[in-house]
Amino acid sequence: MLSKRAKGIASLVALTAIWGTTFPAIKVVVEDTGFLYYVAFRFTLASAILAPFAFKKLKEIPNFAPEGLLIGSLYFGGITLQGWGMEYTRASNAAFVTGLSVVFVYVLEVALGKVKPSLRLIGALLLAVLGLYALSFSEGVYELMLGDLIVLAGSLFWALQIISVDRVAGGDLYSLLFLECLVNAAGASLLSFAFSTLNVGSLGDTVIPLAYLATVCTLGANALQLYGQRWVRSVEAAMLYLLEPVFAAAFSYILLGEQLGPAQALGASAILASMALSMVGVPSRSARRGAPGTVK
Image (tube, rainbow, N blue to C red):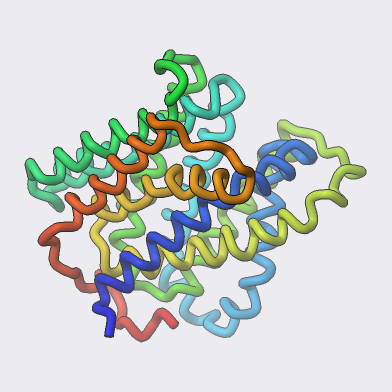
């Protein structure tokens, strides 16, 4: 029988695999609706799907409102700044800079006194960043662009979201997930109405990818994060999230026939090695709040 830690790791690995499949669907929706409307539609649909389940526990939602609003706001900050920054930089730059959130998580947790400085973890971090660099820039070198600074601010929000989930993941899953989705739906809707216009005639092509993004990539993935981080500490979770570009490269190879060059293969291997190094000898953890039975 799998230990709680093993289940947590498996959940987070499954989450990164799901993230690795999102890019084609996101590209279709963003090209037809624009980035802000994409976020608004994705999270509004996810909120609507989850609402009947959340309302069955209506009395519990207020108990988790501060936590749900916090992780939702941080997620919205991350996804919005990342999308805005990508308008002014290359996709490879954005992928690399976003991955630096793992460094932010480690530095912040050390500063907060939640993690002790460790040569093992520092080595794993360096190995992961080098691997991410090799995956992102297999055909060239990094060149700083204006959008990178915006994406970097977004990666700080991602780091804070990972740390916050670490603290609240023991709460009721339905309440936290519903509030997280609701905040993103509301925030993106307000910004899209204020700063963007929608081509209604293009919505027909977005129905299927939006359904996939709202169900599998939002409800499924975010639930896996809330569950997995019950048993996996924030720094190790952030390291696991770096598997996303590895899965993206693998799916591109399997589904699209894209070749994995030597540098990319080396980068993927370095990230996998960093995962192993970061996980060695790390004990399981207990949920911060609530009984394990609150997550089904």
